[in-house]
Image 1 (tube, rainbow, N blue to C red):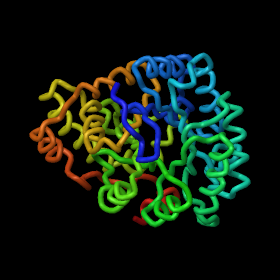
Image 2 (image 1 turned 45 degrees about the vertical axis):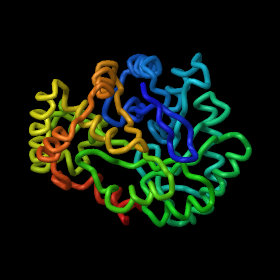
Image 3 (image 1 turned 120 degrees about the vertical axis):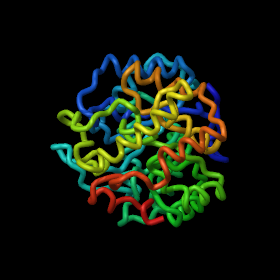
Image 4 (image 1 turned 30 degrees about the vertical axis):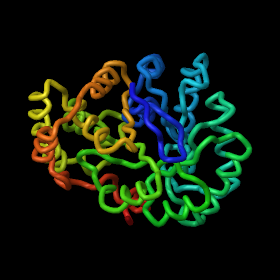
Length: 331
């Protein structure tokens, strides 16, 4: 596994990271033993960067990762944690909290659940519109000085917020959706990040399975939030699945799977971009890791662009209420 520098001020991490959200019920039922085995296999394969959020399964994901890492050498992995998303007892989303006291309290609970004495990257999950980003980043900076956090990241914010945050403390990366189907960062956000020496951890590289080559329409089960995602609904789903089939032809010509081509495309967009593999099963992890051996030629890029042109997807990234909370959508 190749290693890459995560931003000019960041650590060296594996070229791919493991996104662990799906191991805590966001896409329907998951298997604890299979999830832990997947984390172990990822580490064995050379993946060092594990991504989570304190609100994934309302703490479940952090406890799961903590269990999986119990006997792992601390210098062999990095844990990236998002915080601030507020949920009610029924699992509903009720806002974001970026107040300095809330930042420090959230980290205290995360460290306890993870069984760690520090996290490697700590980031607000979204921008709290009621709290200046300078205050939120300043609180994390205090935690860096105290040794509880190694690096500061951001998530789903736009260029103005990125600049304001970076003026307070070095920012190592922005976590944001980026895939063949979600390419909005290319216009203004990615150039700003590169100007400032900030890396990208790209989630949704398979669009939550939509362009992974396995998802079928109306296959979502109980507890799968994709039933509320515009890109997975009705005629939008039909149109987007047609793009997947076009990409499947490109993949077949390369002796690869759709997922491997989609992941390799994101990884090839720059050494400053780390794709997060959202595998929660060993077979999906194994398939995704096959992307490390896929080297795309100029002809491949042309064929991929023809199969899935920029802005060809239908449907917004999230439901309207969630889209309204994305500072990144404001550029």
